[in-house]
Length: 295
Image (tube, rainbow, N blue to C red; front, top):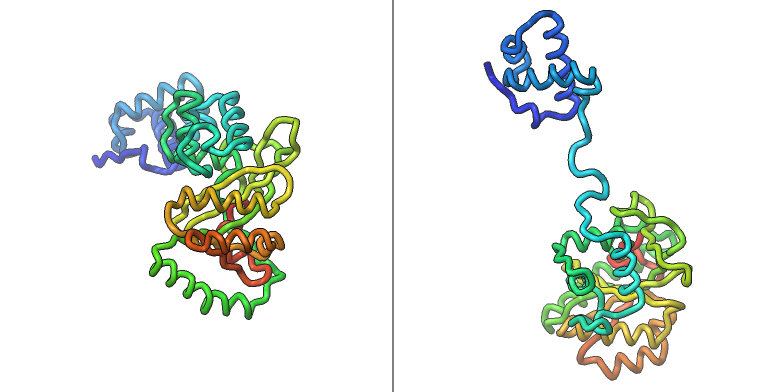
């Protein structure tokens, strides 16, 4: 007799084996005979038959595998709400953390500081996903783009930027601003495909915005703000990005008007040893990895 590990089979196949064992038992076969025919241990057959006798076919029905939704969570809902609001209302250094912008590591330290829970980075990422602060599926191709300009940028402009970054020891970041709605429920876990992640905040604010930058290595840094993006907010974010990156930054942005403002241009000129900004072709957000954060 060859004994299979029934646990390795799909749930439907496991359930069919149990039903087969019950049918054979009703036909008068012994546990050992059933075990030979089904390919499991006779003790396993006994367990199945007892479950059937106690509960009928519902007793041998396959159950969902893995943890139940929400299990394994380390934070209470009250703690989650507090952490989200702290992230929304503060920068890390305002909370005596060693970061200028929010990252998974910074949030990990915040959670430990506020709750004494030591969460793994992956778990922190899961929470950020549930709160709408993490990358999702790429956005659909923007219809407004100019294909010829896009092709030229990809073939000619970006390789030059990448080559300069390598030669100068700079780090490439792709920046973006996006709105985060707070007027809809958002449970724990990843947003469904095609849905924009949302965060639920308190009643005093209907929505917030996020400015973020993602590196070619996938490092995400972000900051939450109220109101519209202006030159002061943009330069403030870039100051913090420089501080966290600890080397020269090549920041790729789209063509939002504020990105080209006189104040921003003047600030960039003063800080050209620390940061340079490059622009995507007119309305080509699908090229920008950071647009994928909330698409």
